[in-house]
Amino acid sequence: MFQGTTRSERAYEAAQKVMPGGVNSPVRAFHAVEGPPVFIAEGRGSHLIDIDGNEYIDYCLSWGPLILGHAHPDVVRAITETAARGTSFGAPTLLETELAERVCQLMPSVEVVRMVNSGTEATMSALRVARAYTRRDRVVKFIGCYHGHGDSFLVKAGSGVATLGLPDSPGVPEGVTANTIALPYNDLDAVRDTFAKVGEGIAAVIVEPVPGNMGLVLPRAGFLEGLREITREYGALLIFDEVMTGFRVARGGAQERFGIDPDLTTFGKVIGGGLPVGAFGGKRSIMELVAPAGPVYQAGTLSGNPLAMAAGLATLSHLNEDVYRRFEEMSKRLVDGIVEAARETGIPVYAAASGSMYGFYFSEEPVVDYESAKRADGRRFAKYHRLMLERGVYLPPAQLEARFLSTAHSDADLDRTLEAHRNALKRL
Ligand code: PLP
Image 1 (cartoon, rainbow, N blue to C red):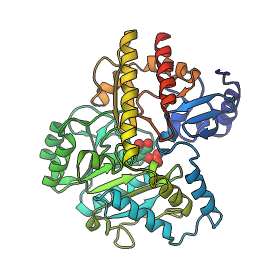
Image 2 (image 1 turned 180 degrees about the vertical axis):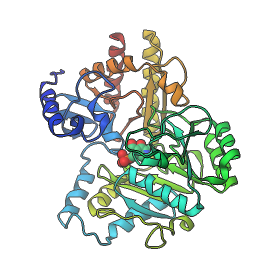
Image 3 (image 1 turned 120 degrees about the vertical axis):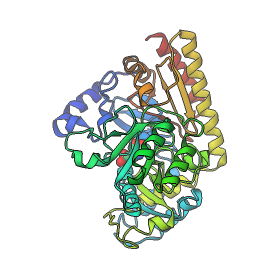
């Protein structure tokens, strides 16, 4: 039984007095949905418990990292046993090499990897290396793909071909984003045209291979392959931002699922098992530019810290083929159930899944890029989100965000979720 959110409301008021907007990351403030944010007291497996005592099935999972669910005993054990021996040394440890070896083994395109503390750091650093390697400045990104909050990536989602970047946020100098070219996702012609015009100046194309920051959009057949061909032709690097898709859409990430060999890959989320970790890696010839092997500066006081390495290793050790088979089944079941219930109620939805990620939109058309994602009915989602919360399901509080599954999600969780969904649709 939903018991209301009185305590959360009070907590939110107190938080707003001492933190910008009451949160430490904007989307947590629930601005895109109805009602104030709920404050979390505890996570257990696939469930969250808020400070009012409401229990939810969680499809946010801290925005992706918790592929084994909350407080998995092996992850908790790895963290506590490691912490008892010291939390950080600023000196090499065996755990760092072990996690680096594991990543290289799971993703053969990655021969050398550097650990950092967030996905944002990973993409910023990968871009620096790509620019140094190619001795070029421009970067192509796709509208609606998020690569963290580094200045170069905060570019207004402009339409049209080769929209030269304007900053998306005050405080970002135009001089920085002028080198960022934002193109529509899934539009290979736009990429070809841009390269035909300015290809000699492009250091890299960075892409979320399965974008999860505009809901969940699937790459059209040939799109990722096309990016690989075009970048090779012009001597630009292809950066797969697998912060979200890494170890999620397949054990070897999107590069395994789609059979692409990127030059550089960025990681975050799952690789840290719920602790703050990111990483970037790729071909040895490129990564050897990174200091101290080479001249490209990149560093971090807490980078590769033992707690995060231990949590990451414990998490990755559970990910076998069976886990991914089950993820495919679960996400398909959810997507099918969501679409079927929508058909029954006459509310148009479009849904898609890839491995342990899925998404759906209140949309009459398939969503293939940011423009079509934006046309989905946000107001309807805002209401739906609250109805789902009241029915014990915690979804990421924005329509244009992917939803995540964990190994802790059970068939009973899925049944309850679909029942809540059916029920919520009827009340829209
Ligand atoms: N890249 C992608 C694809 C992401 O989804 C995110 C975060 O959601 C980032 C980069 C930034 O990662 P972080 O929030 O750890 O800085």
